[in-house]
Length: 352
Image (tube, rainbow, N blue to C red; front, side, top):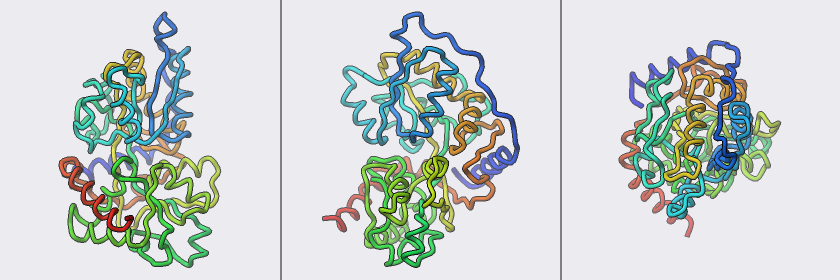
């Protein structure tokens, strides 16, 4: 997102967040297939348990009789699984982890299909980039900070520069950018803050690795393990942190880097050859509808949506209260392979 376009979009979101509205209820229950076997949805998702619980409740209300089977994992794990199943697809749709910076790299496993609600009360910055991803929510880079360890170690964590403090050696965790959408989100923000592919950006990444950055195969470890006291800081995303705070976490605080933050936009898509593709499309139509967007946002309270319709979030600050930096999504999409290769080279250098 660039310059005035990004600023205008943020101003629009800020206006949306500033307003208080009633929760928009879903329309009356939608008719499902007469054959009950066609009402079983296999949902691949990288979203949190909190997100999935709220969506399940909304879908059961919207589609009485629907059966939802969730297969949870990272974006990398799930897309790898779908490729292994291409000859006999087992899933119907994927929700979460589908970053707009992916470009067309998953065109072999997702159907070229967009909801009729793609352009209905949608913020202009969040149109589909590839004809497959129905862009429904955004995920902002943030740090999960363990308050007890922060005090014990005698550090104050406000931004990126603080993470290089030797007292935090081996105390910072992040998922793997080669397979995790949340980790790619964090690496993208470092590029946005320090300059795309700039010496300053790679110097920072290398310094972070030198300070013992721990890489996990599980995206949720970057906030769950911080709450559990295993690590002092997790480089993660605001909605994951907000979800554990909502569930009663007391040891964690949410920190946006003082140098600035940015967000990845994520979508939902139909698996190519899905056994229950018609049902998946009905579900995505609902997720992308203004009613569905507002109902999910306010029922969940932890995820920013792409609708232009007003809503409020209980567990996140207003957009206007956050310092933002511009993220060049087109550049990141075009150069993602090179960035991942450079990351891997540096990671290998410090983790032989």
